[in-house]
Length: 388
Image (cartoon, rainbow, N blue to C red):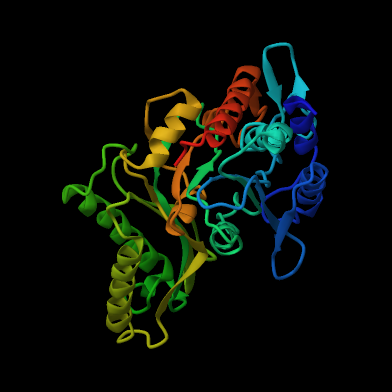
C-alpha cells in the first residue's frame, strides 16, 4: 500500500481523544502482523483503548523508537469544506482530513515503510510505539514509554516523536499542567460584601496571584530564549461562579494551565500556590469558618523536553531530516515522557503544526514525501554496521 492509501485509511477512523481507539489500533495491528512482525497491545484498565508497540529487526541493544498517537481533536463547530474523515485531494498538492497532519501522516509513513524495514538487513532495530489519548493530556505516554524500556530484552536508545514540525528537529518542549481551583465562600446579600466571603472575589485574588507569579518569574530572569514566549506561562482559561448580581457568590471555580520552560519546576510553582491558599484559608476562616480553596488536577502533568545539542539523537535527526536547524515548541507532546524513561528524544515529523486542530487540516504531498525520505534514510542508517 502507498503512503497515501494508508493515510486515507487512518483518516477514516474518527477516533477522538478520550474515546475508544480500538478500531484504528486493531487495523494498524493487523497491517503490521500481515508483514510477519509481532505486535504487543497495551490496553487501558477498562479495555476500550490500547497503545501498540512492536520491534522490527534484530533483538539487540540500541535502535530507534518511532512514536505517534492515534487520536485526533474534534471537528464539531469547525467549518470544513470537505468531509473531515475522508482524505481529500483538491488538486493543490495537499491532502485534507482530520489528523492528516497531526499526526496520522507520520504514522502512515511508518507503516508504508514497514515492508522495506522488514526486508532490510537491519543491524539495529526499529520500534513502533503508537498511543491513545494524547490529545487530552498525553495520558497513555508514560505507560507506553515505560513498556518500551521494560518489555524488550534489549533497550532502545533513541525516540523520534513524529509530531508535525515541517521535518525540523525539535529538541525542546515546555511542560504543561492543567488544574482546577474551587473556592467555597458564604452566600448573602450583596450589601453585606464585607460581612461575607465572596467566592468570586477570592477567586479573582487567586487569579491575580497566579499572574503576578508569572511576572515574577520573568522579572527574575527565568528565561529561555529558545522558546516563544521565552518564559513559563500561567493562563486562566475558564471562570465560573455566582447566580445573580445582587447575591454574594458562595461557589466559584476556575481552570488554569501552567506551561514551564525546562529551568522551572512546575511542582514548586504549584506548591507555592497551595501555600498561599492555606494562608488565605487561615485568614478568611476567621470571618467564615467553612471557607476553603481546593485545587485538583484536570489531567496529570506532562514533562518538558530538554534535549542537549550535543546529544547523539540530534545529529541522527539532522541526518534523517536533512535539516540542521534546531527548534523548540511550547505545546505538549509525548517526547518529554520518553526522555524521562531514559531515551534520547527529539520531535520531527512531516506537516506543519500551523495546520493542526483547525478546519481543513492538511498535509502536503511534499511533506509526505519528505516523511518517506526520512524512513528510507533511517533504514539505511540502521543497516550500517557503524551505527551506534
